[in-house]
Image (tube, rainbow, N blue to C red; front, side, top):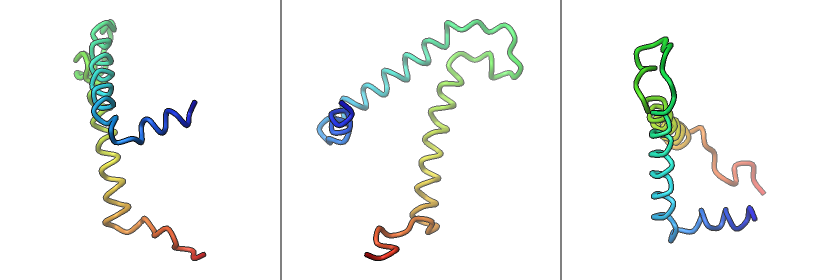
Length: 85
């Protein structure tokens, strides 16, 4: 079962479908956030519906970009044969 899922995700022909699924999931999460009662917000942005979902999404994107930069540009990533054969 897992093998089928991994092969489906890894196949380049399915990228359009997966992107649509990603956008639909994000939209559902943002829309579901409108159903949460907002009575006791501590910070001003706690009262904005959908803020936490969008903030989390963009935070993940930034984490991936910074990690790739650190790995490839700064040199934290080593070659596959770093330890030899």
